[in-house]
Length: 287
Length: 187
Image (cartoon, rainbow over all chains, first blue to last red; front, side, top):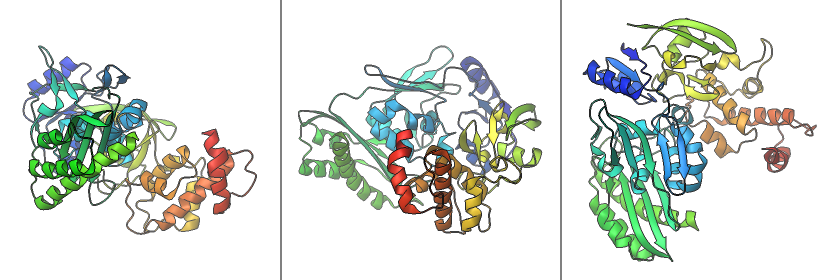
């Protein structure tokens, strides 16, 4: 490993202060599963790592039927995957977690690290955006709560300021009649980055769709919503014709690029296929 | 560079070392502790050859700093066997089935197979695939690895189950029956 100085602050204030005073080349460390790869492959010039794992209180997973789910910055993908609340209420997030890298990586990688890395192909982001999640931060002088849909500003970039720390993510509790799914598309089943990832979160009452959120991963600079496609679903009975029209619309709303994993054209086609499939999978899970 | 005084338990033994903050757990185990059973393959978390147990959970030792293992319980492939001449059922089965060819992936696969069988001694092929999805073998084609894991699992289940006075030989019919009833009932 390339050399860097290692720091173990005991409080958020100490961590935040360290990061600002150490200046360029200082980064927070939580799980490290992406950061250590970037260091070894010289993708990121690191002089100081500020490990936040000794900060107490960041490893909790809480759920209640009114407040929903809240997980801290140190909760690993493996812990959230095994959480009863996630298994029972967030099938889309669970699907994303189970398909993230490998068991070994999930035992180290934090979910909030996956979010803060701000990759357009990150598995956990589409289901969280579709479910209306928010990000809670710590800053010296006062933290804030940011809707996850407004958190990302580009590949690898977010609204976080230097020294600002995401301490938790909250996800509203599902309403009765909520239908959810996440489908990851790649060339293989494990250890894969999504070529396209589609999450849907639908509210229904008496068989009619009353609210729809579609989040598209790896087909734009950030994970995208598809508001026009969502509008087509709302008010419908999620019949095949309407779902097909919404899927077609979602294809028009994404902005994929061609890269080593896929061409833009293929990604766009897959958005159509997977949106349709995700809606029908969400209906099956609920049935 | 600041050195850290590291104290942890490795294969049941209290160990200590003075390590640089940037050293990986993998390099520390191999170079400071002399535990070269754990292999360095890709060094970026893709291949699984460096899998060790940290506080009971399998992780890639290359993706963890030694400093982060302060106070942790580590088990490496050297800690699988209970005595010098007493191999783990997985190690026995791997030898019998020829599940190891060049052997480089074997330590990591043994650790993940142990992790799987400890929770689920009679896994389906799909469950074995899922359990090993973070480990790459470039020699065997995995078939013999699967056979060895099934054999070891059957023996471990038989050893655990008091009324399973039968086999341990690996006959599949027997296992299917056991799988659905006593084992799952016992959780």
